[in-house]
Image (cartoon, rainbow over all chains, first blue to last red; front, top):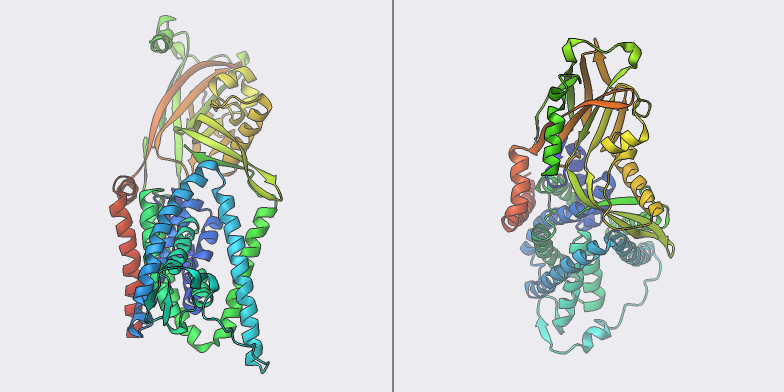
Length: 304
Length: 256
């Protein structure tokens, strides 16, 4: 079933895109991540121009996180106060990201920067997750659990001035810390078309020391708003949001996300994290190979 | 002004010389190609007649008569980048600017075009993918220039945007000709031209041009123009769409 994409200016097999969305949605429902880190590279691999891929997959992440946010709201798992600070940072970050995007695009290294960022980010997060989940699996099998960490949040966070109370998260810290965190994820959202959930969640847990019961809901809250802003930023600056492509991705991913959430209830969380860690590392390894190996295309054309 | 005068002269040339030269009457199967949701490319039939002076075809012993058909897309200003290995990773290093490279180029001929005309004629009339006038904007040394030209042509040849179809033109009875050329889905919209050349003994005896317009239609045109002209509304619609999809799927799912 061929369908012409009016912004990407090419025709794709609609079923392939829906299936791609379904697969990514399944994973995002199972692991609680947006799945943008898989969508963008897969779309580029399918032949969609990188800018269109990054711009359109941001809206897919919005769709995937909506139902999650509602579910967490009902259970009281969203710290709106903290979330709004993160969103504020994210909005500033996406505007900064848009400027960076244009700068890098003009100098011709945007593709390389995207790939390097993916490798560094996915590699380090994937490594951390692998380590953490392997430990958890071994504890589950009767190994001695490691000593719990003493400090609540990172000393750098404690050093920042101006403290606010975040009741839901059980924190009394400077709002500058979540603002900066939101800023970083905002930049990454615009550059890479990802939600940034798997940076936010570990950072909220280990850097800010937030209570575990509000971490996922609050991160989804931030992702929802920041990806929406990123879509707006792309629509007004790069004009690369392909609404047909986004609709196809959404169709698959929202269904997949619901299915994945059901599957996840049947599996042990530490095993899920282990699988996710391996998957993230695989994507990072593939990206690294792409950087180091001689590419298929030495030349590329850019319209002026 | 000078060019217009020259063109007028060329047009009138057959008349002035008492119909001494043959005239081409070309046509195409589709003058307007509309890109709709199911567009996967188009196939053009280019056909026409050769009108010889006093209705007499030339003696076959004078040399074979050939027809060459060239379809060109609108020209684009482009920047071609070349990747190189820097500190272990491949990244874009050198680049070259072209003021007006054709976005699409297809050539069909009754025989391989290199057997029909010499290199000079090919360069003048841009016959063949290696004879394109790419008009580079930045002054570079010729070797680098050629490397980029080859890179661009190779890239576009493999994506189906530039190609040669030797033997694709069929000449019937020495007076009618036809050729089929495929237009891929990746072409940009705009005004295309179909040029037809009548060639004998390496000389172009007659030439004629027909325009072909390719444009997006209906929903596709609406989406493309609103993304360009009403980008804020377009972005809001995209966001609303994704929120609606996500919320709808969640609400629907809880029912079951």
